[in-house]
Image (cartoon, rainbow, N blue to C red; front, side):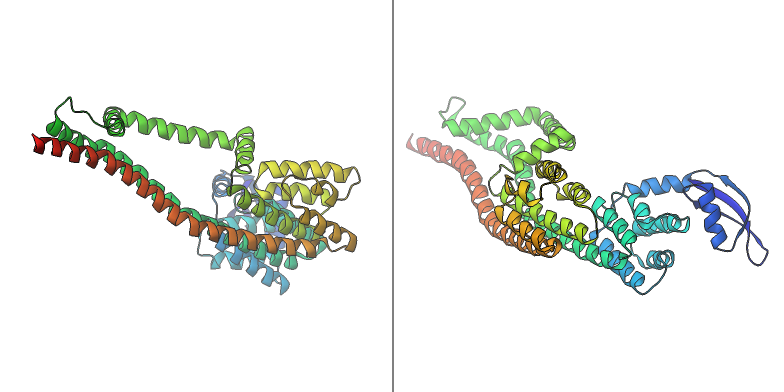
Length: 407
């Protein structure tokens, strides 16, 4: 809530201000700790709250989040109060959006809100995993250690995402250029070639089937190009909208796990995220069932998330987590075996971190291999398209030219 207050400071001077707080009582307690004597306080125009809600919908760069987490960990370890740490970090951030987020969190802390709850108000900045680990760190008195783990985890996730985006950049650029070139050729170039063929052989010239198909496609695009573009855009929008629905997302993730090559990357990435996140939560003292619930949301695949939810039911009934995972369709047996060893020795977090390191390296190697394979593959595809167009055009022109020369 947003409030406007009037107070008297230690020097006896009146001052007015605005602040966000969970309640009027929480704000009064916060201002009292600052040495202010409250004269009047009332609910104000919630512009600050509107700004906070606007900021909640905006994301921040992974780099900003990593730096913030590491610096906050260092300051907390040095005994600096959280409110003061946040105020310092707010001034150091280069991102205006992130400064506003930290400023809002700082106000929440001053009003008596826990750090985890303050982070939870910005779900697009701080994930469920992040928030739950901070809460566990606050409860266990090991917040500085948890923040160090979080910084490493955020950095690792950002590195993998950057690698995947880098691998996808080349084919996406080539695909975009191909689509633009296709429309340009069919709308502007093919009609001129059709005129040349008509001039050489007349309207009744016998052309190969693939040439007639090319000319017919060009004629269609000339007449209905705008409708094709609108329909294509609508189809893309419709598919993206459907994928965002719970049912559509589940089916899309299921399709990814059935697609050759893609399923290898998705599975290994999910296992790496599961291992690192679950290990971090367990080391923070979070219960197995709560850790499974949070980890499922962090994996990024609804099919595997459902498997973990089913495994959680077995754990609730008294089984060890390694038992249901050993029957999983997507978790390799080595994961359940390593987990079983961790359960026996009481070192689940240590063992799963090693599993995460292994699979993250596997993801990196797989992506590098795909990157090396995609470039020549795209060249072959583009060469094939150019060859088909050239054969469809140059062959009939050469044939008609010879006929004319012979006559």
